[in-house]
Image (tube, rainbow, N blue to C red):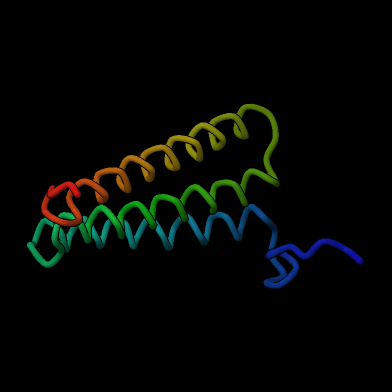
Length: 104
C-alpha cells in the first residue's frame, strides 16, 4: 500500500500544485484585506479569515518545497515558516478582538 499524495490525485507536480495553492490563497488574502479596508469585514473576521489564508499559503509553499532543492528550497522554507508564524499572530489577534476584548 503506497502513501496517498495530493499530486497523485491531480496528476501534477508538487511544485505546480503548491504554486496553484499559493496563488489562490494569496488572492483570498488580498481580497480579505480589500474587504476589511472597505469596512465589509470586522476586525475579528479579518483576522480569522486572514490567518486561515496565510496558513493555507504556508501549506502550499510546503507542497512546492517537495520539488525544490538548494538555495531556492531554503527561501521557500523560510517563507513557509514566516507565513505560518504570521498566521498564528493573526489568530492570536482574533482571539483578543473576537468578543470586543472582554475577558472571562
